[in-house]
Image 1: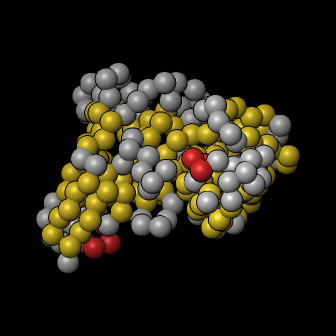
Image 2: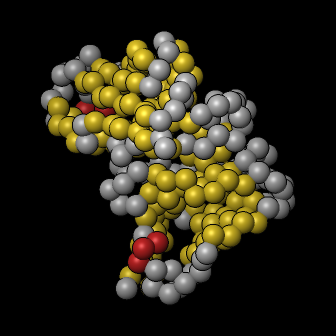
Length: 113
Length: 114
Protein backbone atom coordinates (compact mmCIF):
# COMPACT_ATOMS: atom_id res chain seq x y z
CA UNK A 1 0.00 0.00 0.00
CA UNK A 2 0.88 3.63 -0.23
CA UNK A 3 3.10 5.19 2.40
CA UNK A 4 3.49 8.77 3.46
CA UNK A 5 6.46 10.25 5.30
CA UNK A 6 5.98 13.25 7.55
CA UNK A 7 8.56 15.78 8.60
CA UNK A 8 9.57 17.10 11.02
CA UNK A 9 8.83 14.65 13.83
CA UNK A 10 8.87 17.44 16.40
CA UNK A 11 8.53 21.19 16.23
CA UNK A 12 8.87 23.60 19.11
CA UNK A 13 7.78 27.16 18.44
CA UNK A 14 7.20 30.33 20.38
CA UNK A 15 3.63 31.51 20.42
CA UNK A 16 3.09 33.76 17.43
CA UNK A 17 5.61 31.99 15.21
CA UNK A 18 4.57 30.09 12.12
CA UNK A 19 4.62 26.30 11.77
CA UNK A 20 4.72 23.97 8.79
CA UNK A 21 4.58 20.20 8.54
CA UNK A 22 5.19 18.28 5.34
CA UNK A 23 3.86 14.99 4.03
CA UNK A 24 5.70 13.24 1.20
CA UNK A 25 5.13 10.16 -0.91
CA UNK A 26 7.13 8.44 -3.64
CA UNK A 27 3.92 7.63 -5.50
CA UNK A 28 1.01 9.69 -6.73
CA UNK A 29 -1.69 9.99 -4.11
CA UNK A 30 -5.42 9.91 -4.70
CA UNK A 31 -6.03 12.21 -1.77
CA UNK A 32 -4.56 13.66 1.40
CA UNK A 33 -6.39 14.08 4.66
CA UNK A 34 -5.14 15.98 7.70
CA UNK A 35 -6.02 15.14 11.29
CA UNK A 36 -5.18 16.80 14.58
CA UNK A 37 -4.74 14.94 17.85
CA UNK A 38 -4.64 16.98 21.04
CA UNK A 39 -2.48 15.60 23.87
CA UNK A 40 -4.33 12.66 25.44
CA UNK A 41 -7.08 12.86 22.84
CA UNK A 42 -8.11 11.19 19.64
CA UNK A 43 -7.45 12.26 16.03
CA UNK A 44 -9.97 14.70 14.61
CA UNK A 45 -10.45 15.23 10.90
CA UNK A 46 -9.42 18.67 9.66
CA UNK A 47 -9.58 18.65 5.88
CA UNK A 48 -9.22 16.63 2.69
CA UNK A 49 -7.41 17.58 -0.53
CA UNK A 50 -7.99 15.70 -3.78
CA UNK A 51 -7.01 17.98 -6.67
CA UNK A 52 -3.55 18.69 -8.01
CA UNK A 53 -2.27 22.01 -6.65
CA UNK A 54 -5.27 22.42 -4.36
CA UNK A 55 -5.04 24.98 -1.57
CA UNK A 56 -7.55 25.24 1.25
CA UNK A 57 -7.67 27.52 4.25
CA UNK A 58 -9.24 27.25 7.67
CA UNK A 59 -8.65 30.47 9.57
CA UNK A 60 -4.90 30.41 10.36
CA UNK A 61 -4.37 26.98 8.76
CA UNK A 62 -3.40 26.61 5.10
CA UNK A 63 -3.34 23.20 3.43
CA UNK A 64 -1.68 22.50 0.10
CA UNK A 65 -1.58 19.51 -2.23
CA UNK A 66 1.37 19.41 -4.60
CA UNK A 67 1.04 19.69 -8.35
CA UNK A 68 2.29 16.11 -8.78
CA UNK A 69 0.03 14.90 -5.94
CA UNK A 70 3.04 13.43 -4.16
CA UNK A 71 3.30 15.88 -1.30
CA UNK A 72 1.24 18.08 0.95
CA UNK A 73 1.81 20.66 3.62
CA UNK A 74 -0.02 22.18 6.55
CA UNK A 75 0.98 25.69 7.54
CA UNK A 76 -0.19 27.47 10.67
CA UNK A 77 0.24 31.23 10.81
CA UNK A 78 0.91 32.87 14.18
CA UNK A 79 0.60 29.78 16.34
CA UNK A 80 -1.41 29.82 19.54
CA UNK A 81 -1.23 27.51 22.55
CA UNK A 82 -4.46 25.91 21.35
CA UNK A 83 -2.56 24.62 18.30
CA UNK A 84 -0.57 22.19 20.47
CA UNK A 85 -0.91 18.58 19.40
CA UNK A 86 0.10 16.04 16.81
CA UNK A 87 -0.75 16.65 13.18
CA UNK A 88 -1.17 13.64 10.93
CA UNK A 89 -1.51 13.35 7.21
CA UNK A 90 -3.27 10.29 5.81
CA UNK A 91 -4.09 8.88 2.44
CA UNK A 92 -6.37 6.21 1.01
CA UNK A 93 -4.37 2.98 1.16
CA UNK A 94 -4.32 0.55 -1.72
CA UNK A 95 -6.99 2.31 -3.75
CA UNK A 96 -9.93 0.73 -1.97
CA UNK A 97 -13.22 2.42 -1.33
CA UNK A 98 -13.60 1.33 2.28
CA UNK A 99 -11.78 4.15 4.00
CA UNK A 100 -8.58 2.26 4.70
CA UNK A 101 -6.20 5.07 5.50
CA UNK A 102 -2.44 5.02 5.83
CA UNK A 103 -1.23 7.61 8.31
CA UNK A 104 2.06 9.43 8.46
CA UNK A 105 4.03 9.30 11.70
CA UNK A 106 2.79 12.72 12.69
CA UNK A 107 4.43 15.99 13.70
CA UNK A 108 4.25 16.87 17.37
CA UNK A 109 3.83 20.61 17.79
CA UNK A 110 4.72 22.33 21.04
CA UNK A 111 3.89 26.01 21.47
CA UNK A 112 5.64 27.98 24.20
CA UNK A 113 3.64 30.94 25.55
CA UNK B 1 -26.03 12.97 14.92
CA UNK B 2 -23.58 10.11 15.01
CA UNK B 3 -21.61 9.25 18.11
CA UNK B 4 -19.04 6.59 18.85
CA UNK B 5 -18.50 5.02 22.24
CA UNK B 6 -15.39 3.17 23.20
CA UNK B 7 -14.59 1.55 26.54
CA UNK B 8 -12.86 1.23 28.81
CA UNK B 9 -10.82 4.43 28.66
CA UNK B 10 -7.83 2.89 30.38
CA UNK B 11 -6.87 -0.67 31.13
CA UNK B 12 -3.96 -2.34 32.88
CA UNK B 13 -3.67 -6.05 32.24
CA UNK B 14 -1.02 -8.65 33.09
CA UNK B 15 0.83 -10.54 30.40
CA UNK B 16 -1.07 -13.65 29.37
CA UNK B 17 -4.49 -12.32 30.34
CA UNK B 18 -7.37 -11.99 27.83
CA UNK B 19 -8.56 -8.72 26.35
CA UNK B 20 -11.89 -7.41 25.14
CA UNK B 21 -12.37 -3.83 23.96
CA UNK B 22 -15.75 -2.72 22.74
CA UNK B 23 -16.83 0.01 20.38
CA UNK B 24 -20.36 1.01 19.40
CA UNK B 25 -21.63 3.61 16.98
CA UNK B 26 -24.96 5.39 17.26
CA UNK B 27 -26.93 7.41 14.78
CA UNK B 28 -25.96 5.61 11.59
CA UNK B 29 -26.57 2.31 9.87
CA UNK B 30 -24.10 -0.07 8.24
CA UNK B 31 -20.98 1.91 9.16
CA UNK B 32 -17.51 0.86 8.16
CA UNK B 33 -15.63 0.18 11.38
CA UNK B 34 -11.92 0.19 12.12
CA UNK B 35 -9.48 -0.62 14.88
CA UNK B 36 -6.24 1.35 14.91
CA UNK B 37 -3.34 1.11 17.33
CA UNK B 38 -1.08 3.99 18.24
CA UNK B 39 2.20 3.03 19.89
CA UNK B 40 4.22 5.49 21.94
CA UNK B 41 1.95 8.39 21.00
CA UNK B 42 2.98 8.35 17.35
CA UNK B 43 1.67 6.90 14.12
CA UNK B 44 -1.62 5.08 13.66
CA UNK B 45 -1.52 1.49 12.48
CA UNK B 46 -4.65 -0.06 11.00
CA UNK B 47 -5.32 -3.42 12.65
CA UNK B 48 -8.77 -4.46 11.38
CA UNK B 49 -11.62 -3.06 9.40
CA UNK B 50 -15.16 -4.25 8.77
CA UNK B 51 -17.70 -3.25 6.15
CA UNK B 52 -20.56 -5.34 7.54
CA UNK B 53 -21.71 -7.79 10.18
CA UNK B 54 -19.37 -10.74 10.40
CA UNK B 55 -16.99 -9.28 7.80
CA UNK B 56 -13.51 -8.68 9.21
CA UNK B 57 -10.34 -7.84 7.32
CA UNK B 58 -7.04 -8.12 9.14
CA UNK B 59 -4.26 -5.81 8.13
CA UNK B 60 -1.42 -6.94 10.34
CA UNK B 61 -0.66 -10.48 11.59
CA UNK B 62 -0.68 -10.30 15.34
CA UNK B 63 -1.92 -11.51 18.65
CA UNK B 64 -5.30 -9.81 18.26
CA UNK B 65 -8.63 -10.59 16.65
CA UNK B 66 -11.76 -8.61 15.90
CA UNK B 67 -15.43 -9.41 15.64
CA UNK B 68 -18.56 -7.59 14.57
CA UNK B 69 -21.54 -9.33 16.14
CA UNK B 70 -23.96 -6.48 15.42
CA UNK B 71 -24.17 -3.76 12.80
CA UNK B 72 -22.84 -1.03 15.05
CA UNK B 73 -20.65 -3.03 17.41
CA UNK B 74 -16.99 -3.80 16.93
CA UNK B 75 -14.92 -5.81 19.39
CA UNK B 76 -11.17 -6.21 19.66
CA UNK B 77 -9.96 -9.30 21.52
CA UNK B 78 -6.94 -11.26 22.53
CA UNK B 79 -6.68 -14.62 24.24
CA UNK B 80 -3.28 -13.90 25.77
CA UNK B 81 -1.81 -10.43 25.93
CA UNK B 82 1.84 -9.72 25.20
CA UNK B 83 3.91 -6.80 26.47
CA UNK B 84 4.06 -5.54 22.90
CA UNK B 85 0.26 -5.19 22.85
CA UNK B 86 0.51 -2.08 25.01
CA UNK B 87 -0.68 1.03 23.25
CA UNK B 88 -3.54 3.37 22.51
CA UNK B 89 -6.37 1.58 20.71
CA UNK B 90 -8.72 3.66 18.65
CA UNK B 91 -11.99 2.64 17.09
CA UNK B 92 -13.24 4.65 14.13
CA UNK B 93 -16.19 4.71 11.75
CA UNK B 94 -17.09 5.94 8.31
CA UNK B 95 -20.11 5.54 6.09
CA UNK B 96 -20.44 4.53 2.48
CA UNK B 97 -18.02 3.51 -0.22
CA UNK B 98 -15.70 6.14 -1.62
CA UNK B 99 -12.03 6.75 -2.15
CA UNK B 100 -12.50 9.88 -0.05
CA UNK B 101 -14.05 8.57 3.14
CA UNK B 102 -13.03 10.37 6.31
CA UNK B 103 -12.73 8.71 9.67
CA UNK B 104 -14.38 9.60 12.97
CA UNK B 105 -12.51 8.30 15.98
CA UNK B 106 -13.64 7.30 19.43
CA UNK B 107 -11.88 8.51 22.54
CA UNK B 108 -9.61 5.47 22.61
CA UNK B 109 -8.51 2.91 25.16
CA UNK B 110 -5.06 3.21 26.68
CA UNK B 111 -3.86 -0.35 27.33
CA UNK B 112 -0.85 -1.13 29.48
CA UNK B 113 0.30 -4.73 29.62
CA UNK B 114 2.47 -5.42 32.67
